Image (tube, rainbow, N blue to C red; front, top):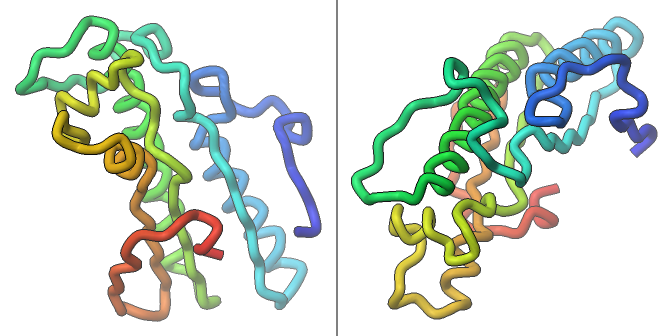
Length: 178
């Protein structure tokens, strides 16, 4: 990588949950891509790590009006419900921004490949993994290794503006993607 850009390099970024917002990152990506293509014909590679939805989930991170509403078939503690509401609201915002990025780049003339992935699932629920049990992400009959695998695997999404091919990447560690 030629450059490393951190929070200190950003001028008054919009913050969500005490971290640089995905809205700010979307704007940053598009602005920097447009700057690059106005100055160069060279390919543009950008590796972005976002933190908006990183750990520290509680009901107070968003206002009542902002929070995503949900229902659960299984009862959740008040703490777990607040954490899930916080996480769901952040993911809702991230999903909107992911759509903006995809829409923008799928309409570019230059060939584009976008790859999105997470390095692990989030730590939701208290120490007893309440939310994962409630949603059957993990079950009592799983070994600890199976539970860890379920909690630490995430999907990968790759799209391009020049091919309609679909492919199942199976399971891979984040370091294998690039």
